[in-house]
Amino acid sequence: MSFTVEERGNPNSPSYRLFFKNAQGKYISPFHDIPMYADESQNIFHMVVEVPRWTNAKMEIATKDVLNPIKQDVKKGKLRYVANVFPHKGYIWNYGAIPQTWEDPAHKDGDTDCCGDNDPIDVCEIGSRVCSRGEVIKVKVLGILAMIDEGETDWKVIAINVEDPEAKELNDIGDVQRLKPGYLEATVDWFRRYKVPDGKPENRFAFNDEFKDKDFAIKVIKSTHSFWKALLDQKASAGELICKNTCVSAGDSPYCCSAEEAKAAVGETCPCGKEEPIPPSVDTWFYYERK
Image (cartoon, rainbow, N blue to C red; front, side, top):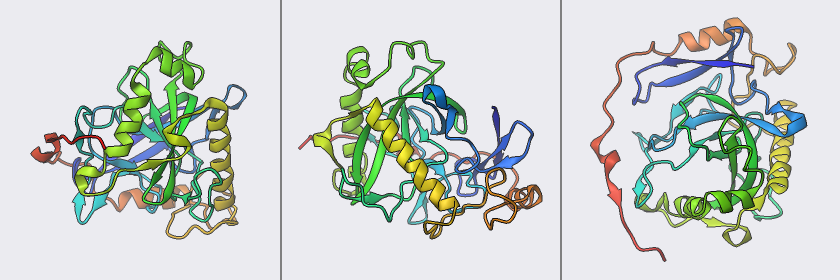
């Protein structure tokens, strides 16, 4: 199963979009049309890479846009970039999401006592290769961190690309601690402090800031998949989410998007144009003492 991407708009501008196509060249939604599993028998999942490691642009699957392309998040009219909070430069993993999952904002999680954040479940891929934006990779799940972000449950799955040279050695969260000492501690530190330069408080975590193991992580992913299924079966409120898809919903579903409709939606966006400059402020470093 292979996927390609098509750029629209000007990179580093609010018009920029990254649309997805399947092997047949058909436009698809990375939220709904890419299967969650790459190999269910081996618990291998697909991951859509939104942010390559060491970059700062806060790119994400646009859950409220037709076909859910990747675009840069905007806050108060400005493109969002994550700050460099010393010693972390940009994102410290390849960051993205598992398709066909959804953290339901109407469901209060029993472990975190908070509702979902209304997004697909996030993934931090810890392999050695820096991935490309929009790449769809196959990952082995190793564990999970329960972040509480402004009162919402925001799970962070820890995974590794199955093609990574170290993938065979990493099978659970304890292996990450043993073979990549300091990486998990840096991950907690990153998520705790990344919003502080924007004037926000530090984020909190359930389970005393500890990672849960692979089995727990897979259980959480499966639960978010069941929430996603309920969403597409119209058994859960979509709110502002766009659930249109070209491969999953039957023809009589309001969420079924024809190939012509999908092509028209892409055609309404600007053609790929000249790259805009990234603001110099993105290279600023922030230093502050841990509490």
